Length: 83
Image (tube, rainbow, N blue to C red; front, side, top):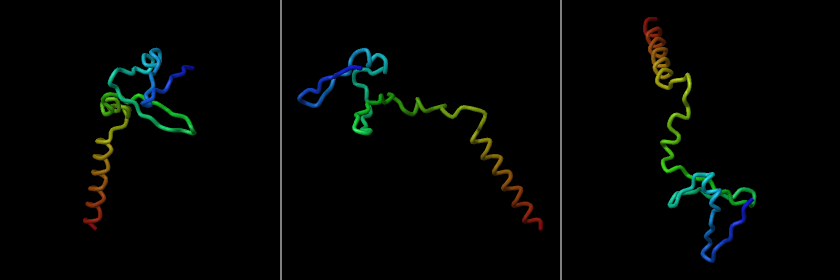
């Protein structure tokens, strides 16, 4: 556990070993949140979109699912028109 001092301006210095471990760089951003009386500091990636890209990788494809739904809907419409 590390202890940091609060400056008169409300600033804190994150210890070097924690900055390295969390990948915090000078000028980087962190998200601050209060949870149950505690201050939680979470690193914000430089490009959140790039970090999130591909997190849903797998055997599923939204495009394939939408095309299948479209074909099924078109099939149902043709069926109701032919009656």
